[in-house]
Image (cartoon, rainbow over all chains, first blue to last red; front, side, top):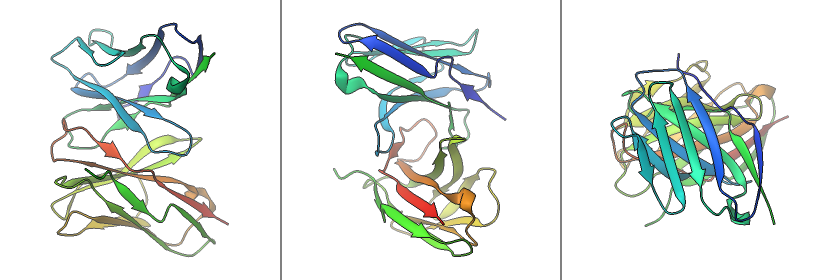
Length: 112
Length: 113
């Protein structure tokens, strides 16, 4: 089955710096990807998504990059703020309705 | 627009009991998915319902079941609870298709003693 993994379980950055969170996926048929942010005691919160016909998508302070050749996804957060501290998950779907596969998560610590 | 709501938020049960969790999706959303989140296994897909039909199923034993009502609200049931069922159970809703954004509820924290 599909597997989605993360390279770095914990990432510490200084406030104001840019953060990059990486994700590898194994199913080359996956065509839809979502990044979620989960704060302690809360459910995952949608950040940004990207479809496989795109390489890059930008939101407010966030950018997702998709490299289908190496099956790699990244989330870039500009000017990281203390409120960005959370666990970030990538999720993939391969035309299988809403059966998403989630990575193990990366914890982002933002130091003031 | 109200978000996804889940009840109860916290639940304590003992082994062998059964439990029913409820999820109300965002208005207009017809798909409801359930996930189990544990520190060891992360987020794992349980099942998905659309128009009162189970459309997708994950790799969980038959003790885990669910259903969806005509108003898209969904319930999941776990019978004969085991200690390993202790987890955060998350519900997510979306409009319909697999490229529609899934929005999660706050989850139900189940503790099995």
